[in-house]
Length: 213
Image 1: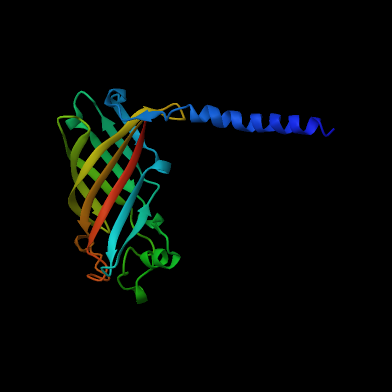
Image 2: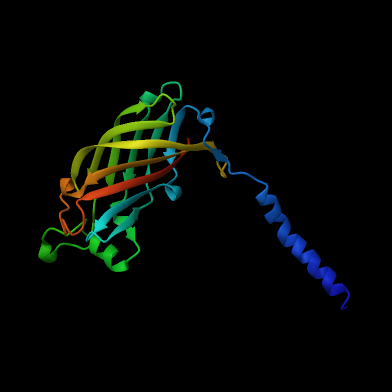
């Protein structure tokens, strides 16, 4: 019995380690290869698309939060990238931060029926709809202009977009990914609480994946 145990242990390690070794030899399905992008309509992968926001807190540190569960569509044509269109919806009610108290404050109703400090208890979804796309000579960066509706106010916003990757995802769907950034002023959208102790400027960093339909 004692002689069998070492061999059994070795066999067990081999069974457990084999998938890991195979995984180490694999590669990610996506790659920064524009030739993989095909024309069509893509839907946002809600589980892997998010808007990260960042403000300055008292001049001492940066503070970030996330809007997730983004939905929407992206229309792409590699032969005519300027004709691309994006229309996404961001559920403000699902905002999250690292501090439960702050998250609750962001979604707190106004006192005695008054205006809330931030979004309120039942905020409308935010929405971004593109109006123009200008792609650089290399085809991997673009400026996407559009209208952002937040807190009931619509303002023009331009996103600096970088192509991240394309390929066939784990669910066998063609997938494309992008990163984008811009800066807005929250006061433009009627959110003035705490300015200037908490910055008016809000940096937005978007990580987006879209699956072909």
